[in-house]
Amino acid sequence: MNELKNMFVEKLKTANKLLVFTGAGISAESGIATFRGEGGIWEKFKAEELANFNAFMSNPDLVWEWYQYRRKIINEAKPNKGHYAIAEMELYFESVKVSTQNVDNMHKRAGSKNVYELHGNIERNYCLKCRTFYNSADFNFEYNKAPKCKCGGLIRPDVVWFGETLPMEEFALSEKAASNSDIVFVVGTSAVVYPAAQIPISGKSSGAYVVEINIEETALTRFADYSIFGKSGEILPEICKLSKELKNIC
Ligand code: BV8
Ligand code: ZN
Image (cartoon, rainbow, N blue to C red; front, side, top):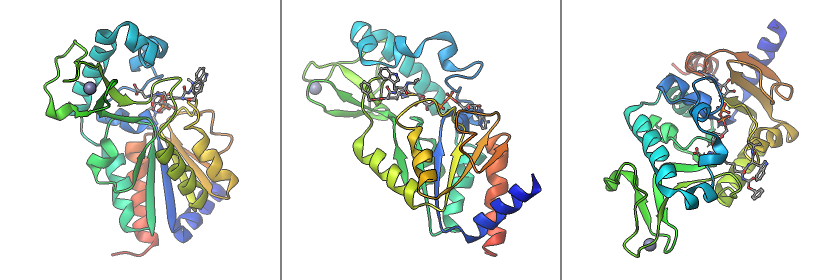
């Protein structure tokens, strides 16, 4: 075990470029429920019932209400020490990029400058008909009624639903970052949703050192060079502090 740790410290010392790939687990300590864990938001509902286009078209108010419920939780939540540690690490490395599956805006709120949102952002919405964008903050959208655009079209959340393709640019930039990084951190994801879960694997096949941070084993653990089991809100600040020391930045 110690040997692995020493290897990790060595990699951290010499690394210049990092990619941090995150999932719902990094926001758990902000009080934002994950998807698949116990107490996860999908325990009550099935993803198929809500996070897909057909569900929205057949019952727009139900799906809209679910997003309003999540927005309320996210607006009342704050980034946690894990989000802030990733933002701070930008001071100690040539580049730190974040590729997130989360739609909760927490990385940007914590100050991370290069964030690729693979599954969109719950704060943004757009009209199905004329594609006019609406920020949730600008509109006191009604809680449980899917709003209509001035053109009469239905407004939907700007998130990627099941069966929908990911934003090409965010995905391509994440793939490129994974392939050019010395270390790819994989934080708080069950790594079951594709094509997002492909990102760390692309990094690995391009020679990146893959470090997983999770409270339990996942589908990705067997790919990882080093797995650190525990809460990301506790582990990431430790890694940030170690990085600062290793780069002997006072
Ligand atoms: C696509 C946004 C091309 C919305 C999400 C059949 C038909 C169509 C597609 C498919 C199909 N079969 C498979 C697919 C592909 C499908 C897929 O992968 N399905 C899976 C479930 C099998 N993917 C898609 O549909 C994608 N699009 O493929 O398009 C296409 C087009 C047409 C037809 C075919 C293909 C689109 C996927 C995006 C779906 N949108 N969310 C919203 O948020 O409402 S997915 C959702 O899952 C979130 O984005 C979430 O981030 C993501 C991944 O989940 P995780 O983040 O990993 O969260 P999870 O709860 O699972 O895990 C949390 C982890 O954290 C756990 O490991 C836990 O241990 C850990 N943890 C908890 N606490 C902590 C912690 N770790 C550290 N510290 C802690 N404190
Ligand atoms: Zn419109």
